[in-house]
Image (tube, rainbow, N blue to C red):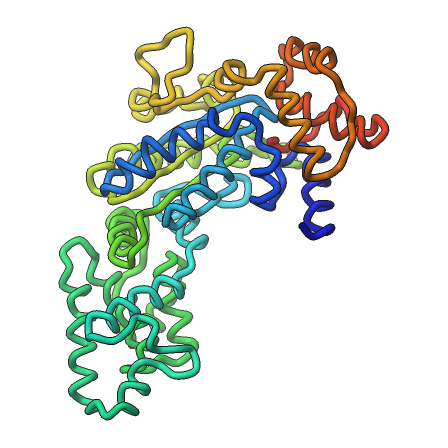
Length: 411
């Protein structure tokens, strides 16, 4: 592993944040088999979502309890399983109306990659290898070089692309934009660079002037009224492109309740309710969305703050609250408490496993013993045991610097 990767990962841990490198993240994960990301992978991504279902989960926990860590591992598992994955930080992306949420999701998607994938399927359906074209020579040019008549070939390709336009599960404007990008990729109808950028931006939900869209036969913008069918179109297209579906993690949702440096609320009451309504629509649209798994994560204030949290928007709270509760956390519940999950499996043995993982990756040599970890696990009234253990190990390796601090990130 590159030294700069290790140093960046170690610096993230010092700040109370998970390492950005997935390989490092997996190497220092303790009790991976008990992690909620593995449960979601086995019970949802590998089965229900892959079969075309959709689900929305909510995930709360104290700072440092491992929410972001779990989300990043979930996305890594989803990518490996063939899903398109998107990570959204609610502090960085505005999530008011549903079109804002659509834009935040699509901005994390490689549209050019989907165009290439669908174009490859078109090429394959015509009897050629799907990778027959290359960036240096498009399919149409190469096929002509092999003796294919231009007009006949152009008509055959266009008929294949028109099948997408006639698919009743895809919005006509969405299909029009995407098929034009595919036609450009295949070489049957060239777009100017600015036209390619316009179509890609429109698909991502960016505001595009009508005068730029009209020559491309796009006569509407993606807004709060049509963003839901556009999302459904996108999800259906993913599966047509050979992807298993979409996995989205929305982190730091407590930003809905926070104030900025100037003391002004990041989200006013109206904007916050718009977010809750968008999430409510996601919850209710499970029958119309194919292969979608959404996880919203934030701190316990989202539950306990009755004036600004989930309870303040009854239409959403009625749909996600757990009607039946027991002494052990129900991993099938739509609303999960990370602190309860950690309390169930985070033992002294897990602490020792975590120390071994950190030592293997960073050669910290912290030298903490079972008695030290027993104290850390037992004193969990205010801070997450995960944070306390990582701080103790990294802090001991740094000669005590950083131990017991209060970083703002999520281990």
